[in-house]
Length: 288
Length: 288
Image (cartoon, rainbow over all chains, first blue to last red; front, side, top):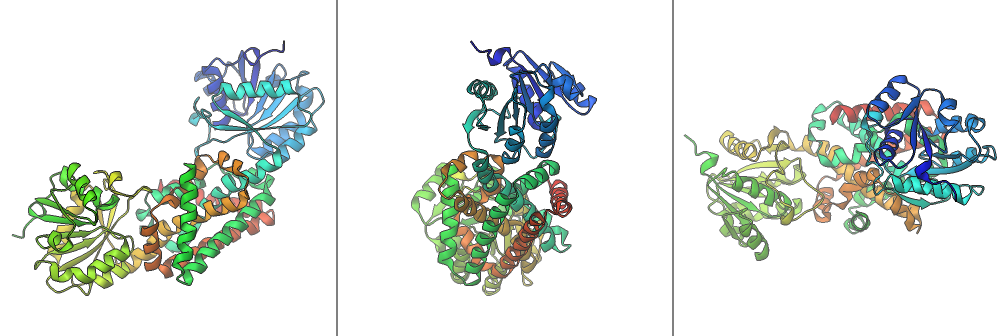
């Protein structure tokens, strides 16, 4: 019988919103034997220990991961890429490496170069908040959310099952995808909304042209449409840098849609406008 | 002494989300002597009476407004324009006509043609929901919200004071603006978010290219950024038709911002991207 997730030591590298919430979910549900946290700053570890999110903490990556059955990399994408280059020799045979980075193609390519004795699985939970950091962590962040898994061709079924157990333990729903398809889909459903929110805030600022009274007129519509523009810059730049072609396609498509609306408005084409508005409304209502 | 708002009969024409919520606020707070509702459908009046939102209801515009001290037009913009053409002769001397339409220039121009014995005031409360209709009405919709007022040059101070009393009675904060400035500012802060949300949903649908799995990946970011696309189509088409030049300017600016982001991403200009992202993030954080 293979060892189960309940017996596992899980080491979470990076105790921000995502890593901290994962630690909180695992610890509060007593889902596994031991949760170890790795962070750059001793203060972060101190806070995580005080909040009982982790059983043990260290600033030393090697020390944190060498006994781990499952290592979860929960830092921005380009930091995950850097850690994947050095982590292999630190890991015990059979240990699993999962990440929760927002893009998957670059990470899975880096995972393919891990030593043979390690089992890699890419991951991306479809949840988050515009506020980042450990203090925003909550044990229910993953509850009922989709948790994308992108196993590699070399990933053994037992390793994937272990990761799926972890996903279920934090209340999420595993969804298997290949990395390229994942990156293309999230470019449209996640990265494009961010770029539109940034464009909205900057366009409004430019259109206000110094008339600060405008911001007093902002109601819930502006607040919600612009919310993701308040997101973590480092996380977002890493996403942009590792998913460029798909995001460029999405930006191109959004500009086409905007141009089409502008053309129809310019021509007073009420029928054409209504058609576009109705299509969006129907799709949106179907979803939420 | 001029008669106060507490002695007034208020007639609300149109019992949707905005009119129904206004009626609910006035009635539940006993802010004025009497609230009369005018609606096209008897069922709407029946519901409003059952919910005690109005004291009296009628489907007959003339009957509803002839005794009113304050008439509030709460229908889509182009319907307000149509009613302003016919309502003048129905009103008693000194009665005030306020509207809650989303654009102000066209409405204030139509108000200027009202007979001399009527006191016109344009209005636009900065609140709403993506769900429309009387069943979504709530007495606190206006609480702590900005309520723009655009009096005409001919509007007498006493009439404006009466309207300001109504605004305060429903918990809102009056903000005086001229109609053109209002329309320019809301194009950026309210109409542009709608156009971006419509473009986002339609762009995502196009980019999915039949891969319906994409919608399973939609998280809170997509939900919030697209929320206003679920808004009322009739209300939005009326807005588009009566604020074309300002909305076209806003669309043009948003396209420029998107192009700039795409150019910087294309060129791998991380510094330029970060600058745009940071500007949006700072502005957004300052606001909310």
